[in-house]
Length: 291
Image 1: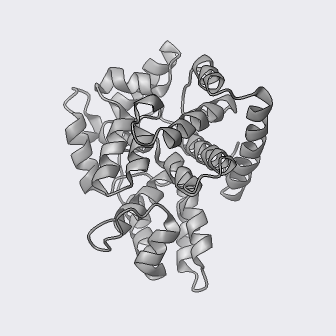
Image 2: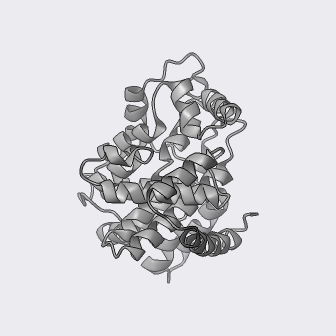
Image 3: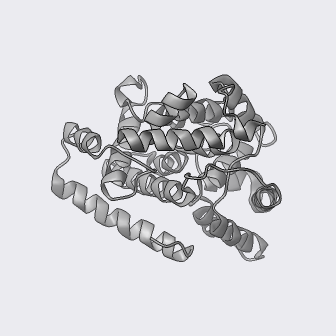
């Protein structure tokens, strides 16, 4: 069974193939309820629906994947607002409702020590910081950076469905070594979950910036064409961890070095963290999630 692939038969190519073909990503329960409520409202507007969808990595990925599929042909759609324009509000409502109902009706194993709330909070934090940093640099793609932040740990959601037992081992390995979760994933699976996400999103016709920024988030200088955007994602992840919103584990020393190398002043970091905590706190309160 794929969910308990403890023998190591899951290769990167196989994982990408399964992810590219299946609707298998978890949606945060309280957010799913809110999105369904909005979808059922005859007066819902694009902005309200976009705001709700963007708070969840699974929903964001799937809606953008559908908008970029041959069904709609919107190659390069990088925002939920663009997807809504392409699909129409009814199309978005239908897709969201189907995905949520599918998740509720299909039971699956999950890694016992995989904290979905931690992943959700970390993804929100990285997304919010990336948009703040992009806006501060007056980048035209600041909103796309927010989407990338929500999707950058997409591979972990997939691994939780495909091989939860081994993901649990990866989480434990990272914590014992005091390393980021990517360390444990590489040790246990033999491949990088960021590469899994990047290849899957590439198959779904996501933009080169999105794929590169996720693929090279731990090594921005390896991104030949999108180094600025990729470095912003690395900075955003480091700031999120320093703000106390890591994804299961992080190396604080490494995070501080990333920011020091980019000439961040402590006052600048504190200013961004203040904005971040306000943003994430408001979102978590809205969806009834304990901080």
